[in-house]
Image 1: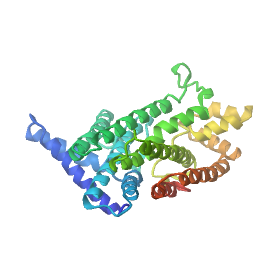
Image 2: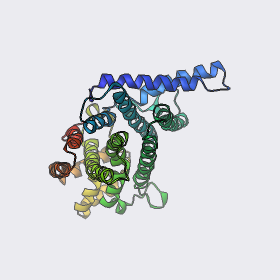
Image 3: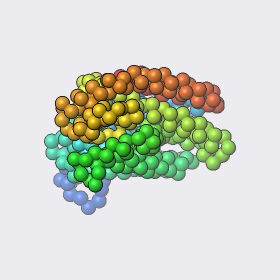
Amino acid sequence: MSTDKAAFLSIYKQIESDLLSDISNLPGLSSELKRQLIEYYSTCLPYTVPGGKMTRGLTVIKGVEVLKGRALTEEEYKHAAILGWQVEWLQAFFLVADDIMDASITRRGQPCWYQRPNVTQDNAINDALILENMIYQTLRRHFKSHPSYVALLELFIDTTFRTEIGQHIDTNGTPYAEGKRAALDLSRFTLDRYRGCVRYKTSYYSFYLSCALALAYCGYDQDSDEGKQLYQKAEDVCMRLGEYFQIQDDVLDAYAPPEVLGKIGTDIEDAKCSWLVCKALEMVNDDQKQILVNHYGRHDAEGVQKVKELYKELKLEELFHEYEEEQKKKCDELIAKIEPESFRELFTFLLGKIYKRQK
């Protein structure tokens, strides 16, 4: 049941219906204005929230299941699925905003939300904020009387803050000297910056949040001795999983075809502080570095190709495969230390989802 996408999607429809009802019940608006709002968000929500692999959401259900050590009751499944969908809602909020910041064209094989007809960039920014607010509307609706309500709220608040710090490190890691796009300061592309960005922008919301929500829902208190140890071990594994996942993402951005990846990779054009460019800068000679100086961060197809050829010359893809096997081994070692043993199954599940993924 925990990985049944059809059952999970049925919960999404219930949440969507409730949220649209909230809009229709807003006081002081004419029936015509409400009709327009419902029409707009009846398109926005299914376009931006479902449609991905849903691993983050399904992980919450899997986590509750392994912590309970049995099949979930109907109510437990519904609660876990609702929490899982709130992680997917958080993802939607981040992606709608991130696509605008990166001037991306496609997401999940279709135009980014802000690129849609009749959706302006200004509307999309507001839509991202509404998607975030809907998380708290839903949590209040279903968990206000639950003993873990405050813990669940705090996990979303803390994770959102950390992810936004990571986004700042990422966007501020496009280091144009004195604000001039013509002069790219490559000295700020370091693995130190990269690791800080990954930890905060990816690891917490993509891995740790789902595991921590399962712990909180099942009554594990972060301040108790047992709870503190469980949350810490979960965080240790998730930080490593997140770094591995993001480095995979960077490699796929450069090497995977768009029809497989589901989006057009633009890290080179956007001058992203990616693992590939950070590793390249550690390895290049002066002539090779000049290729990056001349072409990294420019929207020029020929220049992008020259950067990719440099990556090939430096054998960065081969280096990644070595790194991948090393990370798999380290993750297995960390997972083996987790108690209770049943909880290990959750992290084995997560590692299995990303090991050697192709998109």
